[in-house]
Image (cartoon, rainbow, N blue to C red; front, side, top):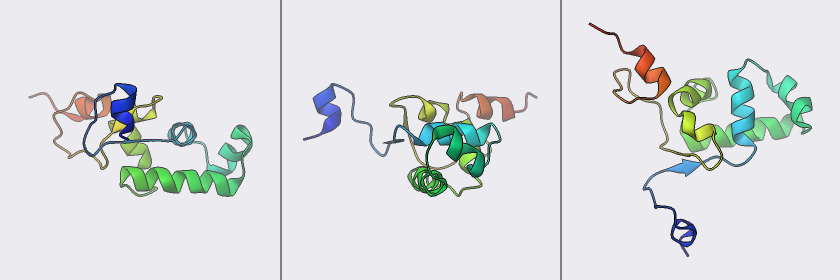
Length: 107
């Protein structure tokens, strides 16, 4: 059974969601926390933090170094149930995400 149909939500092709824990960890990375700082804060093991980061990067189709940029370009991905398309935006992206909008130069 299609979960999107069962919950009444529209089925969006090629979109993904993060688990409950992944957005918390990515958000803490955006704030400058290291994996060693994140583990005690969330009361999980260091290896669990690394596993969650690896899963988030796989879902987003970015490297560990790119995950912070990804979260700036896909702010809805960090919200509960937020859906996102994997990958980084092009440098000339015309979308209205705060990061992309702020990167456009006004002539």
